[in-house]
Image (cartoon, rainbow, N blue to C red; front, top):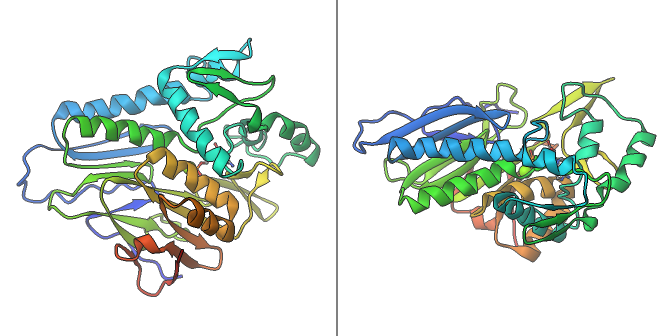
Length: 342
Ligand code: AMP
Ligand code: MG
């Protein structure tokens, strides 16, 4: 596959990019940039605004990370997973996150399942001890992952014994929603949030153009190549890919996106799914869920529910994108691409 390298002015979705926006001639005075590590990834933010705005973004992300860490004994999620009673009162942000995630869980019939944490643990994706669990081990864990038993009413959560949650599929998208809410309240007109390749665009770049988001080439191990560029404003652009986290054993590759019906990494012929829509948590949740569904089912989901656009990349190196992107998504020259229509 042809490798295409990142161009100036384009930020890649689906990767951790060390790219800094071209410094320009500074016609917009207060242009702020920051990079920091949080949620296991490099976060990059640029915006035109006050220094305190960018510091607030960092605080919003770090506060959320403190709430949703599965390993930090102080986190709200740790308290949920190590509860001694079945009913728990959630904080407002976590109740909102779980409520929004469960809405996607229902429409995707559990393709997105926040209760798969015991399965991810068994594969060692939450630690550095990755391993292939036995069929018996998975069979014993699957009954603990029945998302239909999650009861959430306002901030009151009730979970059956043994169930454990994980927001790995939605937390970065949710972080971008919280940040975008703040930036809009502050009247910020130009901002780009890049949370480890999960991007959110506000307004335009400082030249007054739509932000240009590169879609990562899943086969380029330098993580610099792109298969296309999306022009974007006021929306999340979020990719799930099997190349993001995986290990190999006996020549087989095992990645981190799980099929909740089998407890195995899903194999549906997709290597990445990018979702474009106004809500970060929806884009993040759907990128995972539609990856699980595979191209045909995912295309039908899009036809049925609408309200978002998508770019799919299949194992045979072809890309498919929904017709709403036709005027603003530009596959890299030489790429095999097909438009999905209603
Ligand atoms: P993403 O990179 O957004 O697709 O999210 C992947 C992460 O979500 C994994 O590292 C797991 O923590 C979690 N996860 C894996 N499979 C699923 C699934 N089917 N539903 C919900 N979360 C999942
Ligand atoms: Mg996701």
